[in-house]
Image 1 (tube, rainbow, N blue to C red):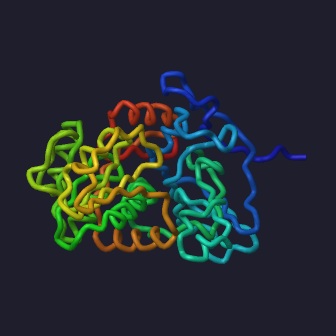
Image 2 (cartoon, one colour; image 1 turned 90 degrees about the vertical axis):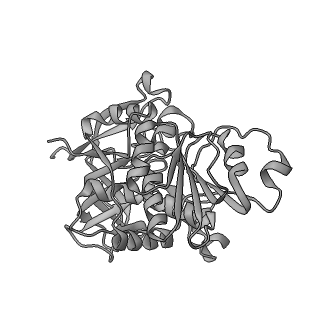
Image 3 (cartoon, rainbow, N blue to C red; image 1 turned 135 degrees about the horizontal axis):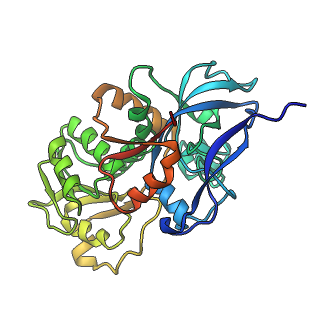
Length: 340
């Protein structure tokens, strides 16, 4: 009997700080797709801060030795018999939301991002820090052939979650948006907001990130704790730093909304009602996304063509990419590409 075909992947062996080496490379049997799944050969995979939270233990592992990565561009190599969405060779995107029950009240109401039985790529099932992965075809997205894979990959989480955060922030037409933290998701969200006619002020600690924000069209770029030149109509917090919540709330104008875009946030300090919440300021969280969010964002991105500032890493340097992200050495977005 022939030995089963194998693939190479990175897995979270033992969560901990990146200096302890939580990611290890291993070979495993190549899984055949289930009835409603596609088997993809990975063309590119974005490196997201959620991957870092998983590797370092901020998010409790749900699957032993899981491969991170949920911004995946791949080609269909095989498909299950029930798959109707894709054919062999199609270019497919796999994002964070990997599956839902489809039957609970949240799913029936179009709020599948809140499904108690939701599953996630790179957390519940293997992600794209690998040469191959399988995905539920019903939760994957068709992708265009033209753009490079490494420029499409960040759209699948950084772009989609930024889009949902922007919607949750309820920025009025032509309003002033504050963005706290300026990494992968923020630099895409800023461009979507600008294309919609908004003004954007960015607050981030990195000098290179501040310069990138200005280069992309932000009207102001300051340190994370700087007061804005004028009150903000809405704000999005991308940095996973809870102590920035009162800072951002205090920067809002009356009736403004702060949306917190991360899956993990350090503790929020005590808020002062009069300073931070009174005059109908609103604090909101952002939880995952729906497939409708994904489709709407990808269509908007196809129209506006946001510039994706990519730093490429070969797959065998995935641990270096995640370490660089942890140390804030990445401006824009890190993307893994296949080894040559």
